[in-house]
Length: 444
Image (cartoon, rainbow, N blue to C red; front, side):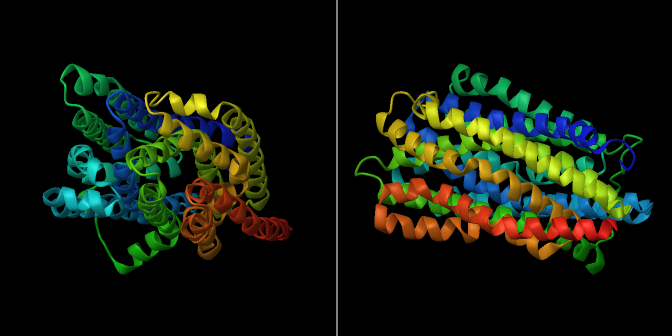
């Protein structure tokens, strides 16, 4: 971590995380494509359930990044004992919280669907999709934690194996449950739940490999100090995912509110489709940036600030170049891309194509502030890391989503994400300039 050429090292660490992120995003895309063959309401139900998935991700990434960032620094400082305790606390706690969430939500699925923004005609479909997802919450939440812990230890390859295996199983089970067994939307949900349980078992097994920190119940020693360390390292991820959840719910409500009469389900479905398209593209950038994180953490712990700076600049440049290419494709072929999911609904295609173009217009700006936010998170500069993490889908997106439609109607809803990305980039530039100067000074 502290000796190999930085660019090659980042790429080596990034390949497994990119594969894991892309495969995970792919099964979300496949879910939407299969369910799109059934009905518009079923596609809208995926958008509704996405808000609950972001809740799972909020706690999973919070404990995963919080414990994982501490683990990478502790291993860089040769403190394996503290790292083992934080790893065990970081794994067990989200499993317990996920169990509590499932107990509360399973008897109240209809209320949960309406809370997440489902129009009346979509509620039965949302209930069907949420049922098995809610039941699998403790395993999904703690699996995210395990994956991030393994990645931030430098064992990204095995973390990839666990995530990718579960995603491949999900893709294989989808047509079997949805069409062959005639389960419809419930089949997609059951396929996801089974695949997530399978991934959880693989990831947990990966912690017992010789090169990994072992998860042992005897190391589950929760204390204020341990949770404080997790809190400091995971707060940016928690805020980011909480705002993602609020953004997903708000988007469902606004899509239905500003849609033409009778097109509420089509509007919610259109935004669900575009969200999955953008998630798939962003998963490559996120995976590459996550490959940068352990390199950053280890080298910062070892006080090799020149390698920290070099890896950050390299990650930002590669991410931006990739997004420029992807955005050009999205701008040119947006109607054709959206039609792949639900060609039978012209309103869905029209709303989705415009939305996709607005998001692609600002998408290349995402690379810089994503990499910079992860840099701050790994070097424990909690405030700027948290600020940058919550702007895209929080501090800028939510106000844009509330204000723009009052002036522009549905077009304002479609513009909101692109406007938020532009504003986040403007905020990130001064921080990027400052941290670049600071790292240069630390190198001296």
